[in-house]
Every structure is written in structure tokens, then in C-alpha cells.
Amino acid sequence: MKHKRGKTGETVLAYVVLIVLAILCLFFFYILIINATHSHAELQRGFSWLPGSSFLDNLKSVATDGNFPMFRGILNSLIVAGCSAALSTYFSALTAYGLYAYDFKLKKVAFTFIMAILVMPTQVTTMGFVRLITNMGMYDTLLPLILPSIAAPSIFYFMYSYLESSLPLSLVEAARIDGCGEFMTFNRIVLPIMKPAVAVQAIFSFVGSWNNYFVPALVIQSKDKMTVPILIATLRGADYMNFDMGKIYMMITVAIVPIIIVYLILSKFIIAGITLGGVKE
Image (cartoon, rainbow, N blue to C red; front, side):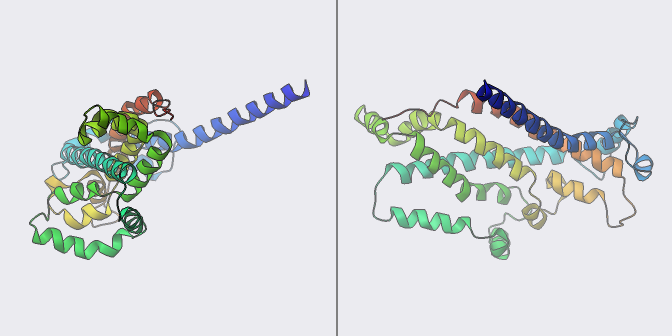
């Protein structure tokens, strides 16, 4: 009887902690949405718990601003984040499969080299990267924001760890005996097993690329090629006192909508594929 009571108490405590954490996470979204409904003058007077009446005005102000191509910026961010997520997850999974399923002399060296790149800060290679893309004629284009995502060491390591726990090599050998080519084996057998890992890393990659400010600020100059974080930064303008906080909060609100949509789309693959990798020898 005491054991049941203790177990019930632990369950109640777990639910309380989860509810508190959920409230803390949603609280900041609530503040963002509430602020997006107030005008600049109302926001200067202080925070209000109740929504205001300036939501449509702020949205119209942002959407019709000739100096601020909001929809073009969202399209640019969607192109960059979508392509980066697709390239990083696919090629990282392919690289992880190659190192996991094949034995060759430099296998450990290749793995160590990739892990060494993982701990190297992006800022270290910034000047060389900018000079390289300038010489290649890719400065002020979206390509420098997309192509480097092919090499993603952190995603590779996650994929490699997932393969170690979920993919028996006997399955790969059976596919080879049946006459499957290596790419067909990967695309039709290995990749479906990795679907949960791919979905998780696609979300992280999409969000990371969507929120990336450092690299786009270095390589993008034209307004019609700017991504959302750069456009949000330009809303403040050169004069610190000359900016509309209502517009800024509205743009941030609009900017998180695609992230939420992507998460909702990919989350079902995570839930549906939880047991997909449970193949055992």
C-alpha cells in the first residue's frame, strides 16, 4: 500500500514539474504575441498582460514597408533553412553509413578528423571562408549559406551513434546478397530505419539555419537576399531611438511561424518512427 502511494506521489510530482516547465516555455511565446498586439507607444509605457488592438496595424506596417521586404526575407530563409536541413541530414546520414558499414584502413583517421572539425569554432575560419566565396563569385548570394551544410560533423556523429544502436550489419549484407546496389541499399533500407534520427536533426538544422545571423551578416549585402534575422536587425535602424518596437515584435512573431509548422510536420515522423529502428540481430 505504501509502495503504491509512493509511486502515485512520484507521478504527481513528475506531472507538476512537467506542467511548470511547459508554462515557462510557453510564457515567452505569450509575451511575444502580446507585445505584437501593442503599438510602440503602448510598449514604451510598460508590459501589459492583456492583448492590445494594434495586431493588424503592426502586421500591415511590416508587410507594406517598402524598405523592409518581409515576405522576400521569409522566402529566402525558407530556401536556405530547407535546403540546409535536407543536405545536412542526407549527406551526414550517408557519411555515417559509409563509416559504419565499411571497413578500410583510414576509417579511424577519418572519424577522428570529422570529430576534430566538430570542435573547431566557426569564427576561426570566417575570413578564409569569406575570401573563398568571393573568389568563387558567390558573395552576396544564398549559396554560401546552403552549400557548407553538406559537411555537418555534429549531425554526422548523431547519425553514426544512431546507426550503431539501430542498424544490424546483417541487414546490409542480406541486401547485398539480394543484388541491391550500395545507394539503393542506403536509400531504400538504411534511410527509412534512420527516419526518426533524420527528423530530429532536420528540425535542429532547420531552426539553426533559420536563426543564423553571423554568416548571413558577412556574405549578404542586397536587401532582396537578406534572411529574416538580418531583416529584423535592420528594423532598429542606425538610430537607437528611431525604431518601432511593435513592428519588431510582429516580425519576430511572423518569423517563428514557419519553425512551428516544420516542427509539427516532422514531429509525427519522430513519434511514428520511435520503434522503427528496433531491428535486432
